[in-house]
Length: 281
Image (cartoon, rainbow, N blue to C red; front, side, top):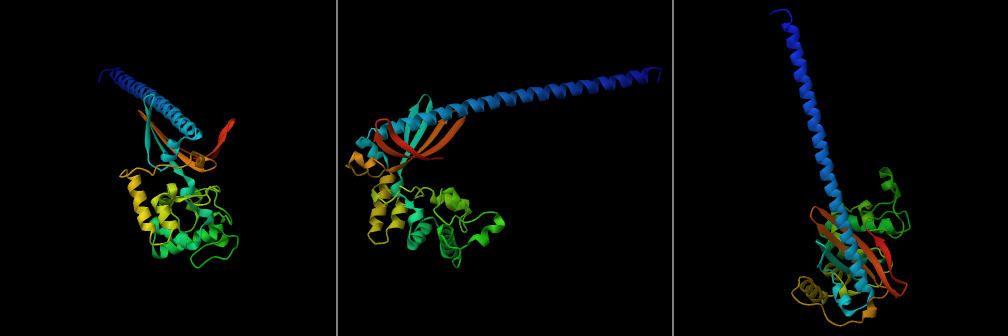
């Protein structure tokens, strides 16, 4: 090797390495820029979906506050679609009085409710006893239930009173997140969901709340109605909407964005305050 060739060779290696580092840096910057653009697009889509959900909620509240007969016919849990400014908005109205009020149920109703959610045998007994121990005021566990000593190692304590949300059930012995999701559509903790009203009830709530043999026909009729095989019964007084807790569920979709929102509202018909919001999810 001639004098200086090794230095030139080393210099070439360093130059190539430097170019590679610069290339990698440039690639990283380009990728970061691309991710930022995508994130920005995602934020924009989310903002549009949020606005569409707000619009869907506002439109629905307007119709409910108007106390028209059509509003009564819409409280059946079936999805209805609104097209708004390029967004697809699906709205469901559910009468909370057509759900099982968890804080005011008898033991046999709890059994039928859990059966409707798919539990049997020991799993049903554990969930029933766990729920009753969670909401009662004493510290004596039932046979398959649990009280403060059983929950202490998890850093939680039983409510010893009324449930404050459906999600709270996931903390109760015998209740998995999957079970809570199966119950969510036909149970409520809203204090104004009393008394139970079968007029707009879900079939599973009907089956759990009534034990007589004739209920099977009523459940079948509601299932047919909700499946669109027959129309909801006409009639009813629009004033029946007053002071009734109604859950509004809104799903808004735009290109690249989706928002789900739920509110439990009570229609007051007061000119300056036509509704009250009880819960937001």
